[in-house]
Length: 195
Image (cartoon, rainbow, N blue to C red):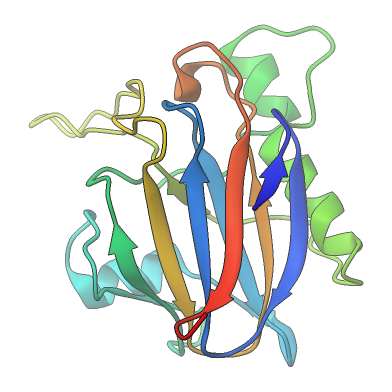
């Protein structure tokens, strides 16, 4: 198993047919997941397209997450937690400055993802919404959002099957509110169905 230390991220290639299991090792820790098409990094994971085609914002086993050009990129094949977020952008230095009032803010998941993709020779300046594994963002009847502690417990996981060759960025989220005010590591495994 690979471990992402608290408030950091990593990048890697994921071949078509491979599976990525993202594991909350200690409980109540969010992981931002983002991917681009290996053959064309300008085609990326799209919250808007995915929500359009699913017509809902909760995610189940069997659901497909789509690209900005409506290409199926990954399928959720296992999901032990019912709450994930695909509405919010990754936390950034501006997030910490505006929400928390930090004077010397951390680069956040946005900076960690930018660094992870740069290590894969992919220059991503900005990120749309990432798939925020385990993040708990209920919507009130009035339409307001609230960030609550993740429902995930130690060992909970979500597993994605790559439907194309992808380049992936993955983080151990850096936002206090998202992780019940404690930063923890994230685990991940890459394997094929047969292994």
